[in-house]
Length: 356
Image 1 (cartoon, helix red, strand yellow):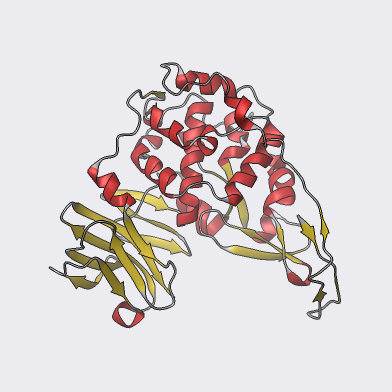
Image 2 (cartoon, rainbow, N blue to C red; image 1 turned 60 degrees about the vertical axis):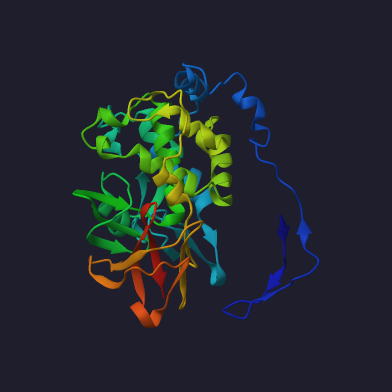
């Protein structure tokens, strides 16, 4: 790390860009190789072995989250003595002055694996370990993200959007009402849910609400949104507190060897389907864009496409175009958030696009 000096106040700060004070800090999780010693993903006891590895661990009460995670990790400094916190679900950056306060900022702690999904529900009186687990808790805007999400399954919306706030939306996947978080939280959320299944011997089909959660979507998000620097740093920090790790952050392919619906070993691993290969090669960039968005499916042509807005209205279509790359502009569809659906000789796929 590097620390730079500054002086001044009230908008007249001067930052020194040279002669930084430098240093190094290593997290307690820097040598994770020995943590998984003896774990074999091909063993029929794989999920049980992970359970025994994760447990027991240090339990930190849910009500200490402000001290443990907000004050010590999530809150970021900004100019003029203010700070900000990011809503995990929507991406909102909430700026505040002074000490972080849940009520003043309108924020809360969101259980990614919803509290009501837990077999022990209500698990907060007394507090159960699964209710308190820091790996499963993220800061979220209470009214605009946490409450709309409620206990809905997480999935990609392909129908009508009924609520939207920044990067998070409530809408329909087929006939099912779901919540779709911002793209950069999808992998994080998937890995939190997979962790909870294994850490507490849950299964997704064990609850009338969690039963709606697609494990296929979790795996898809897990592979499409790999752990970034924020998630890795957060993981290491929680490891220093709880003394246990999320295996799905450390080992990407572990997700292939567990049937999360039943919390059982899955010996065949991940066999990529044609649809999964299509999804993996479907690219929309840049997101967001100031004007032009490029859409392509690597290795094949796009035959037909349509662009749909958040109300489900088709704003643009193209038939028999047979193009390797589509160019969609602000002049063609206007500013907004859309779903672009494409058809290829190998099937169809869809992605979100944003034009400012």
